[in-house]
Amino acid sequence: MKIRKAVIPAAGFGTRFLPATKSQPKEMLPVIDKPLIQYCVEEAVQAGIESIAVITSRGKSSMEDYFDRSPELEQFLKEKKKLDFLQEVREISKMAEFVFIRQKQALGLGHAILMAEGYVGQEPFAVLLPDDIFDCPRPCIQQLTDAFLEFKASFLVLGRVDEEGTKKYGIVKPKQVSERVFQVEDMIEKPGPEKAFSDLGILGRYVFTPEIFEAIKKTAPDKKGEIQITDAIKLILEIQPVYGYLFEGIRYDAGDKFGFLQATIELALKRPEFSQKLRKHLESLLSLTE
Ligand code: UTP
Image (cartoon, rainbow, N blue to C red; front, top):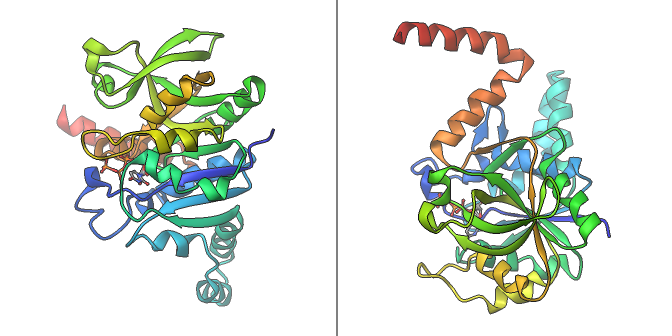
């Protein structure tokens, strides 16, 4: 069954990015010239997703405006003959069908995904966290949707993490099935290096079967009162197999200030209009510090 729908949870407070996120959504912070959320929308669309539900909250309506038409701006750009911008602005609202669903309280990622139950219905679906920017030869979410088609089971994207990473991500206990596919035998949220089962961390892309919603409903809140998706996936493990896919490509944690800087510099170095200029500039900065 083809995956047609995606859910983008974007209702969190973005505390790691304060004060910038005090009055604007983290998901709208631009990396070069596009907001974070657009990177994952483009990734989903490239992977054949047709409809996207964004989970949003109070103070985040700029995301709805962003994916809507903007007739006044379009008229202005037309009159000024700025046709490239006009084309770019128009394309944004046409990329997919967009649905916005409110999460009234930020009760965790699991809870945010549960808000999409009515929208998703009884189909498998993709989840993309907009903090993670993936730069991959094949869109990261497509690596998962292709694997889903083969195995007909839920998939999590996995990346190799260092010791620091074991404190930041859920870690799986893997049973290797093929070069990049691992059956998940168990998982643990942010265990630290001593308790980590492996160096395979769960990053921000998932494909779920609809059973995930019942599992989330049965999941108790953690110590912070948040419903964690990792705990819900552990419940799913009891009734059906779940797999991890070791993605091919590069990933930036743009929800973190340093990761955001890395993403900005590295993606700019890959853009033809900036690459030479920026490289020269960075080299001159480095030679000054030597
Ligand atoms: P994060 O934990 O990275 O986002 O959740 P956050 O809570 O906004 O950021 P920090 O940790 O305080 O800096 C990953 C994604 O899940 C969404 C966030 O908006 C982010 O895109 N999320 C998180 C929700 O939609 N609802 C929640 O209750 C929690």
